[in-house]
Image 1: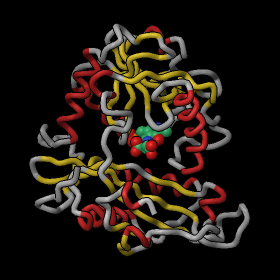
Image 2: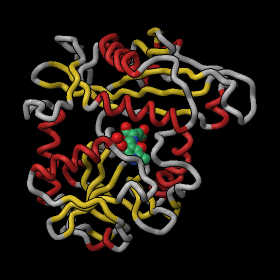
Image 3: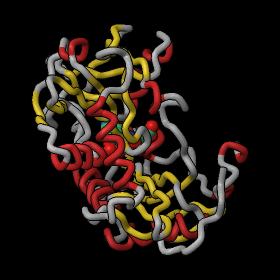
Image 4: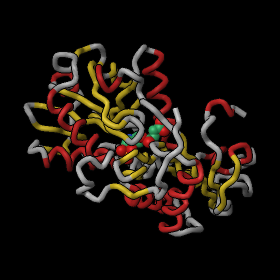
Length: 318
Ligand code: PPE
């Protein structure tokens, strides 16, 4: 048991109760292990002046239920109960800022592709998670490539569902990028238009406007993506969801990833071609500042994006 990877985690929520970290295990004949039959979320909580708060919790819980719906998984508990279980998991571990991973999966049942006879199990883990794409990423930007792997066509796997099986494609993109010395890969859709990173949405700045591939381009409709579009519009920046041809990646002025884990991460080159002057640009910096204020409640939570965790003092974790 790789306890040392998660020394701060004491409790994991499984099917209605908190269990000790060491006991949060599943059987090898679990359906999801064999057939990818799981859906999940990635959520972050941040420290705010009013104590720890979860960013856009209702939106994440809603997306989890929608992902489950696509795969005909009926959760044994309600959205309210999942919401409360997430907060309970954070409180039990006495976390302030942390990352939260609810997972809904087909558990132990009769072997075979048909998932329906297997139970729908739920677990919720939380742990402190730092910079997803490396320590320097936010300040300097990351080096990425365009992947030779395509994102799944809409007629194969629905990108709308945040399903565990989708991440086999993401792993191919990621491993190819790492093998070639990049931090991350960008997937194109089957038409060859830009889709997204292995675990992040993508934004481009071109002539002062902010562009992002539309949800028809085999991508996950990110909650950070939505927040960034809202904040950018408030800053007076024109935002367009549109088809993005690959060539624009090399000629745009600024480029960045968004995601719960990655937050907003500037990109400094694509296939070794510098983005703009190779440093995070002005629009990127303005959007990062607005995002930072929003997640930490420094803007008075004027969008109502923060759900208090409900513990006055968080345990300090490194
Ligand atoms: N696209 C993909 C494929 C994706 O996995 C994520 C989140 C996003 C876009 C951004 O969505 P949102 O978090 O709602 O803004 N990826 C999660 C998992 C990353 C991981 O390595 O695991 C995340 O960021 O939590």
